[in-house]
Amino acid sequence: MPDPERPRPITRFGNWPVPVLCGLLAIQILVTIGAGRRDDLAWFDPIVDVRAMVLEDFVGEPDTAKMQEAAISGMLETLDDPYTVWIPPRLEKDFDKQMRGSYVGIGAEIEVVDDRLRIISPLEDSPSLDAGIRAGDVVLDIDETDTLGLSSQECIDLLIGVEGTPVTMLVRHLDGTEESLTVIRRQIETRSVKGIRRAGEGWDHMLDPNDGIGYIRLTQFTERTIEEMREALDGLDAAGTKAIILDLRFNGGGTLDGAIDVADLFLDRGVIVSVRDRNGDGRKWTATADADDHLIPIVVLVNDGSASASEIVAGALQDNNRAKILGERSFGKGSVQEVRPLPGDRGTLKMTTARYYLPNGRNLDRRGDDEIWGVDPDPGFVIDLDNAGYTRLVENRRRYEPITDETDRLDARFDDPTWIEQEIEDPQLAAALRTLQSKLTTGEWLKVGGDPGSDAVLASELRDQIAYRTRLLDELTKTTARIAELDESGAVEASAGFEIRDERGNVIGRVPDTEADRIGELLAGTAKAEPRKGDVDEP
Image 1 (spheres, one colour):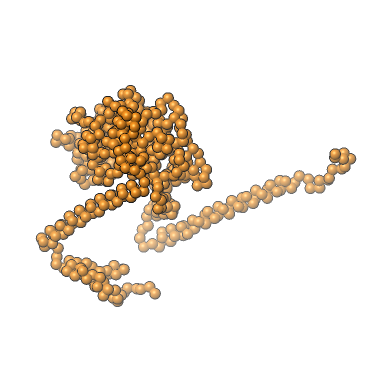
Image 2 (cartoon, helix red, strand yellow):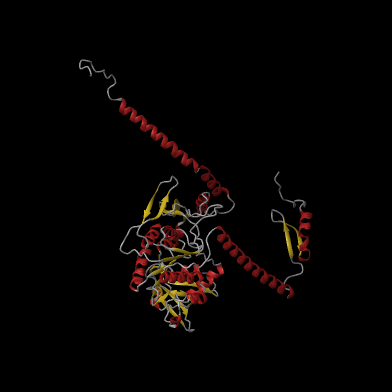
């Protein structure tokens, strides 16, 4: 028990040490921050010095804008991450177009054929459609600029512009008539959700009306993808759809939110994806049970062009046993990028800030010599195509995609897998239709392909390399034949051959064609050639 009579100790210094110590601590913090700031600024010293020396004494006129772009790009390249990039102000409009799926222009899909711009199809509800632009039109000039020899990007630069401004196009229609059409540019909202063929200005999403099998092709994940998906699914619901093919082939990704929303449409529970930063911190997204959940059989088509957000959707549905994945192993991009505008309108930094993980805990990134990456098809569902095969199916499918008044498409039989294989040359879509028809009629999934794994991936790569070698050999054969033609015509002088130059670019010898097989011997003989008069060798 404390003694009440014991006197308290006398405080001799008052309360002044507390504020003094706080002040000293604040000074130390400021000194530390200042030192760190000086270290940050010192990091730029050699860069500033080199720039100053170049601007002062370089023999040519330096392009300071290019120097700045190169400095930033070079710094980011050291991160060894192809997805961390700086977008300079001059490229931000194209970047925003990709991210948001919108731009100001005429609204048309285009290609360059025989050195001329051709309209694949005007887009639905677009100014080009309103102005009379039709699928197959050849654009002869744009605002009196001849399109002959222009690249697709050069034509796009002429067609896009300020909203509300006109662009005049001279077009040649399929019947051979020419017409000058004026299109008023406006904001174009590109659709990321497509069907199997056109239905007027919209899309037909019903693949097999008898069995109730629908088809949705998702080209990218944008801010509006979830709205377009719900619209397509509402139409399929009204048609009595019992199963769906979700085509994610060549879908390079997009927004993380878009992927989560789409996956949640087909899940009522379970983890969709988790994200972790370099410290292991992050968050997890799980599916919620909603009235618009579509818990029907699904086949997801993927290939090596399916990346990022596409892999999130495919992996989430596969790990939660909600879909069969069919095709070939996906691209393998399991990283999350944040978009951060730089102050003062100096561009945009797209930077990898985290990696995402499938419900089973696996990251999808393809790194180094890893044997496993991306999302593999299910056992019995591997169907691999080479580049030539994909080119054929895209070209054949395109016949049914333009907005046109033609009626000959009524003969299309998209409910017949054999017809799809023969006419569209799309064995992956045909196999997806077959296995869904089996699932709906027998309750069992029909195995329609091979098994996944490293062997399947290596076999796929081998086929691609063989096909690439075949193309190179074809080009070499053509080149050899052309050389023979020129040689026979006397177009090549007899004195033609090879020049031998030193490291400074000086010609130190010539090898005629007739002695090409001795080029190694001749090079050895000139290796000891004396320096030319006036040349300076370093010690």
